[in-house]
Image (cartoon, rainbow, N blue to C red):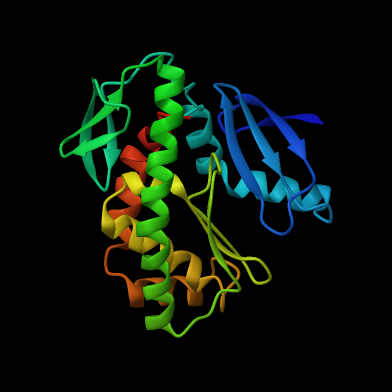
Length: 227
């Protein structure tokens, strides 16, 4: 369903509302005047109105950064573990990683993009999941399972029954950012919300919280250049 919400400055925005979220309210950008909101079925109208009023900065941020379509031609560069890597082609049939560049087989961009996404997801599995396991061991926490996700808006998700999933695109971020996301999700095991005890635990295990959030704010959207 769609509804209209008026911001404090009188601007009216459109909200595409869906009621299928399990417990958390999920906000996704859509366009310059529309956001998508997925809320739990039990959330009442008054609670929704209060949430919208109390989270106006998040709404404005979503409106200012609508999702960008993946390019139809090869982009000039991508991020890999916090470093910009230029993309080029070569005569071989495999991807060749020669920092600070990645060489792709000659083909249509759609095929190259598919190969590159698969390559990066494999590197993410080799890098991010062991990193998550190391943090879990150090924090003496045991998620039910760990896996990668293809989410378009979340860096990670933690559920008590299904465990923790990390966005494979985090392979583009610096290690300290990946560490922050791992610790953030692990802290949701004892603290399912974002209350003071949750943030105290996050800051206890990572001194880079502020820098990591800043990096994701500045460059996070660039990690979705491949879609």
